[in-house]
Amino acid sequence: MNKPVLGESITISSSWTKIKQAGQEAIINPRIWVPLLGAVLLQVDNLDNEISDHLREHTPVFGSTERASNRSDDLASLTTVAYVSTALLAPGPAGGGGEWFTTKAKLLGSEWLAVKTARSMTSGLKSLTKRDRPNNLEDRSLPSGHATRASAQAQMANLNVEYLPINSGAQQTLKWTFDGLAALTGWARVEAGMHFPSDVLAGWALGHFIADLAKGFINPHQEVIQVYPQSLGEGIGFRLVIRF
Image (cartoon, helix red, strand yellow):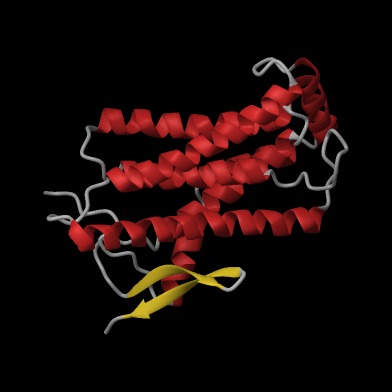
C-alpha cells in the first residue's frame, strides 16, 4: 500500500473530542513527562545549580561559554533546516505544478504555526516565571526558548521523515539525528550559562507537547478545515477555510 502524501490535506477537526484526545495523547507521551519529572528531581539537594555551575565552568563539549552560546544558535537553526527540508522532500501530489506548491504551502504553514505557538508560549512562561539565568544577566531563564524551538522543530521533522521514500533504518537514523540536534542545543545553553538544566528539560517537554498536539491535526486522509498562516498587520494569525 502506498503511503499517503504528507500535507495533501492539512486538517483540523471541529470536534472538541478530537482536541481533547490529541491533548491527552500528548500529555502521556514519555518524551513529555519524563523531562518534566527530571526537571522536578533536579531541584533535590540543589542539583540544578550544581550541574549548571560545573558545566558553565568547565564547558566540556564546547570549550567556552561564548562558543557554546554561538553553537546553540547554529544547532537550533539546523533543526529549522531539518523540518523545512524534510517537508519539501516528502512526496507531493503527482504532476507537480500549482497543486504541489499549494500542498507544500499548507504543510509548511501548519508546521510553522505549531513552532510559532511553542515559541510564543515559551515567551509567556518566561514572563510569568521570571527566573534568573545562571549568569544573572536577566530573569528569562525558564523555560529555555532554544530548547523549546529545537524540540518542536525536530519533532516536525520526524513527522515528515515518516513519509520519505526511504527504508525504516534510514528513517530512524534521521530521527536520532534530529533529536540529537535538539539535545545538543539544550546542552549548549547550559554550558553557555544561559539556562539551568531544568529550564532545558522544561523547554524540551513544551516543544514536544506542542508538536505532538499539532501532529494530531495534520491528517493526510480527510479534508475538513484547511489552515493557512496569514499576516494581520503587525501580528500573525491564521485563516480557516471550511469545506462542506
